[in-house]
Image (tube, rainbow, N blue to C red; front, side):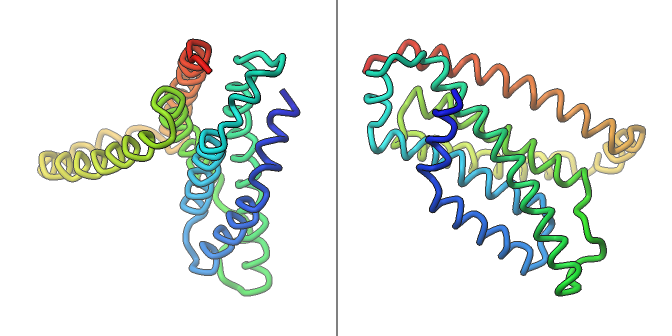
Length: 209
């Protein structure tokens, strides 16, 4: 398992340098860390999946005495490890930009923003990997694009339909603390992540190479 996770990180070492530069750019533009962490996670997860599919390295992996469950599990664990890496990197950049460039109001990012960034990575992973291993990299790009556009369109429709009820929604949400809302989101995302993990294992074990 460890060697499979390490393989992904070594295989994407140039991408990791690019991601580090992009996170720095987000901080130069003084964007909230949630955007930097989420975007970095999307790049890493999609690159880890698509590179293996394009290079057909999964054929080589499946010729070795490696459990297919371990191959998939390494992808999901790798996404978690990268999320932690992105959080640490974002925190480091904010400290540097605060003390050296006087760019932020506080030396450390808000914990809520870091956690939401991590949840965004886990949510994207939950959607991306089952589609990738079911349909392949080529169709996954199309499907994820359709999903992204669909979410934007649906969001706009919901905003229009609920524009007269925004005050009621805000009143309802105000009954809960930010911690309670974040905890609820974490539980839902965690369950989706676990379900996706198990589903992707089933998909991958059924594939013919």
